[in-house]
Length: 129
Length: 419
Image 1: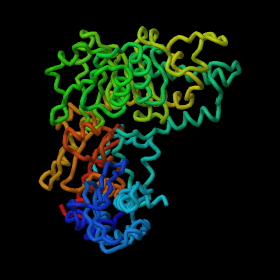
Image 2 (image 1 turned 90 degrees about the vertical axis):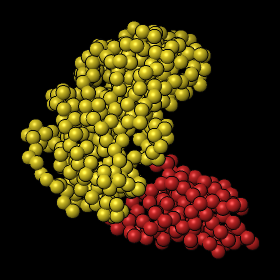
Image 3 (image 1 turned 30 degrees about the vertical axis):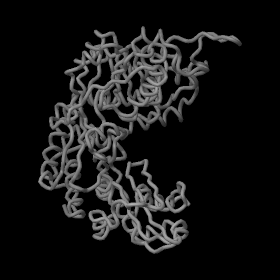
Image 4 (image 1 turned 180 degrees about the vertical axis):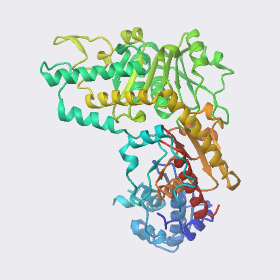
């Protein structure tokens, strides 16, 4: 955790990418981390099964918001069916290691919401799969 | 990073207290001194309390109120002696002390027994905007069961209760539930002003003392509280044991809460009569070991002195305000009353745009334990417009060195987050 708050994490926290709302999202989902109240909403435009655009909206800690911000960059141009199959490693590769067990839900919130949007129902927590 | 910016000589009494808590001598996995600033969540336990648990299980583990053999008699005697200690601790009669799991269960007991028998549609229940979920949600459920309406004593922007409209709020009110001390802001409620006026309006008063009994000298007779609920684990005792105090006449008129063994007088196949209070409310085998150890915790508190604890926490809070104010130019905001005499060892704050969970994680790397989040007061957070706060809370074993460690941790957070 000492090393966790690197510059690019803080950059995504303070300048989140793809932050806001889409005019007409094709799929969307929203959830909160019941432990701390952090919220994330994901909105996607999908064309021919491929993610064309994505926006996220939310509030919370640097870990949850930066993880979500980085995910939006990862999935642009990805097939929706592949988004549905993303594992926790997709997040951990983005944010690096060093997340303590109690903060894992913060890191996984964005991915859970994204996968929920992709499959059209609430996805399980990626760290519990 | 150094743990302390200055190392004032410890008061000998404080040094002896710290030495009584084994956990405070254990370094964290990163080799840091444990700086425990989350006693409002749960307190640490002195050796004497831990030993009381071991003694019960090693020397006289037996069920109470039944066995006629030696260890059963000792278990019964120690269990009931602990009830006596708790009664003395809050100036009650021992027949007015009901063992429960915690303050939450105590409040639910009142809601399900006194509340369900005495409240009707159209009656009012008066709460405050500062209440912990445990002194809010049980009353929401009671209101839904009975058709009673909920009202709230407002809090101002500093978290101080505003009593201007109290008489109007009390009109038609059958029950008032009020926290002695706010777990989020540390505000001490003006019970002396509220309770007499509530009684004059014909209401019964339930005090949520979860944050009061650990820190302030409580005299239920002087307060004239009808019910007073508190938890052992926040006042040096074990988890899983708490107390509901209730005035004897009220307890006698109330129906039981749980039904079963130990709470009966005489049982036939189709009917039963019940024991006298407090046993009427203690169905099944009680939490014997934890009740006995809770009694030992109150011995410890009495021995240190509740007045000493109050003054110690007041002085620490004043020092913490002083140290935290150094960070105000960098965006640190302190919530709640800024007057150490108006609060009880709790400071809620936020540091610039550092989310409290991130702040707590950074402080954790320095061995400093604080709370981050909504502190089980989501409506208060929404009202104030805070999504979350960081909270440091003090108890008898904290020192100025702990406050210095908090300040050093804030310096680290300031560097990491560049604020």
